[in-house]
Image 1: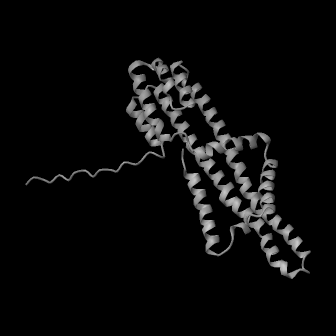
Image 2 (image 1 turned 120 degrees about the vertical axis):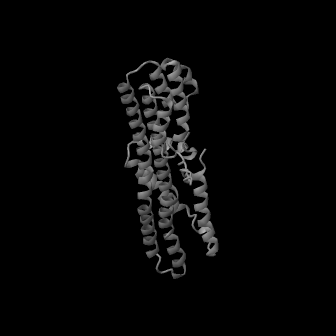
Length: 263
């Protein structure tokens, strides 16, 4: 599990609570049910209205994956693929069928099965790239859904403030209550900005990043299995995948030893 999201949200809200306390304000003044219901409820409502029901279900089901983070990093599949290349070179492609149970994910398992079955390289590429495209589309839909909530929330917060200020104008004959009522009116704007930047946009950004990591991992599997299919030696498979992997740590170049001329 990748704790970055939980850590970041705790830090963000912790900084907000610290600021409230340092200002001598009360956090209960911000926890007003009416503006919170309006902003959060209406934001989710218009988000659903601007997408299809299938998009909404896709976005909601992606929340668990968003909290957990990527199952594995792209660099983690490289040793598996190099190992498959070594076995295929020594025992043939059919031997890869024995590696199916130890495959790191379903996508890699399907690619190994295609190799063991003797599928054509072009057919393998077409099927795997189609699956990659479908996964990319699902990830993009989920990220866009929460990004749209981040766009709607501030405006809905302003709507809530306008509604509250309209109520304040009806009470001008009660000057003793105007101050607290005006302060309460701006809580809706606060929750609009707060939910957009502390909840919806971070979720959208994290889903986008997790999706990018997943696509990179699938790309490595595609290129690795096709290299194995072509009969490339393991060290070439390793070099090819290392060059494609963005998360592979760069190795420091060692300086060549200085050879002094003998006199």
